[in-house]
Amino acid sequence: RDMAVLAFLLAASLWGGAGAWVAPLNPSLGLTVGGPASLLRNHAALSHGRSAFAATPVTPLTRGGRSSRRHAGGVLGATSILNEPTPPNDKVLNAVDKLGRRTTVSDLAAATGLGITEAQDQLSTLASLTAGNLEVSSEGVIVYSFDKGYRKTLSARSGKRRLQEQFDKVKPVLFYLTKVSFGIALISSIALIFTAIIVLQSSTRDDRDDRRDRGFGGGGMNMFFGPSYWWGPSPFDFLFWNPYQPYGVNRYRDPSELSFLESVFSFLFGDGDPNSDLEDRRYRAIAQVIRDNGGAVTAEQIAPYMDPDRAYGGGGGGAMPDEAFILPAIQALKGTPEVTEDGDIVYVFDELQESAGGGAAALGGMSARELKAMADAEGISTAGMYDRDDLATGLSAALALRQQRGGASPRRPYLEEQEYQFSLATTGQQFGVAALGALNLVGALYLGNLLASPYIAGKTLVGLLGFVQAVYPALVAYAAAFVAVPVARYFKVKADNAKIEGRNRDRASWGYALDKAGSEVSRKLKGAKKLATKVKVIGKDDIDYSTGESAVDQELKDWDKKFGKDA
Image (cartoon, rainbow, N blue to C red):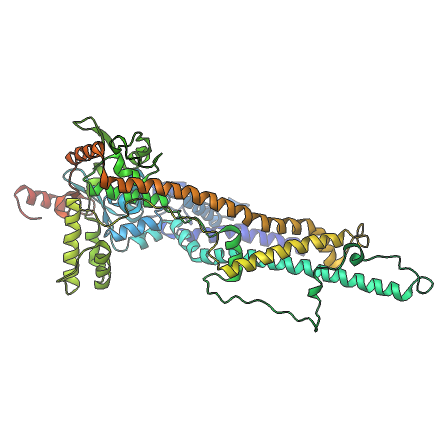
């Protein structure tokens, strides 16, 4: 009876405590005591970027006459988090910071490699979650502006963001434990196999000695033949200590960032995809090419960054015969094909020509050292700039002038994919892991021979040997997989690298072909230049309306503009 009462109290505490675990995930929304009406109102306010959120208390649910307020709050809190819009990731937030927390959709797309539609969705979500300001220019271009504390506001209002931040803190530890667990599993398998072998061989020898001492009628023939009789000398006799045959342990002194336990995971599965950010790099480069050429480009100019179906041949004027490969870029960056006077097709990207100033606006919060590093990276001379203010002013002017003129900043002439490495572990570590894997497999096979010997076959062992006998199929499968997986991955890496080398070669051929363009390509490039336009930089003076200004301020600004005064 006491146990039943205790179980009931424990279940009740867990049931009522669910809300205590979930509710703190979203305290700013006030959902611990909220009902469906308050939940809907909170989401409506969230989607419109309001800064104040409040929950309307409702009558608590009851079960058996007892209050279930905490449980209701926990369920609603969990439902609220699931229904929240997914906040932008760190890639978007870092780009917003680099752009000075004031950006257009095209600025974000060019900085992150996102498509125009996705960049707009990300900025809209960020503005709604952080009460960001929307500024509209006289030409209808929307600029998104955020204050310095927008990251804290995002964390306070988004339960998903808080969960992601907490997960990011423990993710390195979890990933490290996952990697080293494969090394621990290998060592544990070897230890278990060889322990079982030692015990089996020791028991066999003891039994053989006993039978020899007892004999049958004194000196009679031994009726049992142990494993050594059936299978010959054991290849693992070196495990038994012999003072006359000492042996040592090899030590690898090569420096490595990976521990030996981590190198086991690296040897088995590699170290990730070196081209995981390939699409981001691809569309960042394409956006830069488009902006550098006034928003109008030809397929030959985009080919070095896409996946053309062939390399540059040099014949027929050097033009691309099939331009279907450019369709993903047109869709992502909102381009439109236009026909020139000569009948050639040129692709125009008007939306990418709208900017809030980009990097020039982000210089205000940078130190002198950061400004100097940025100038060096952009290839901008800092001669005559002696302090931070000089660096900020000069660098801002240079970036703005480059953007207006479409001046090209340093970039690779083609998109280069990185080849896979079999493992980042050192040669010594790889050799050690391979040797242990082979030892594990040979040991598992030899253990199977021992378990199948007449002395053991058909018997049920107990204790450690009974456990080994039960899990032996899993030990053999693990040992075989440990050898098979790296071998299969080795050939796959070679095949993948051959394909990567071919794609890089094709892109490089088109990248360098533009320097020696044929007659047809030259004609298309001239037609594209006729359609080129300058980047429209939207400054503060170009803004007609802002959600961050009151109606009175808007009227005063309109009044000043009407009479030609400075706002």
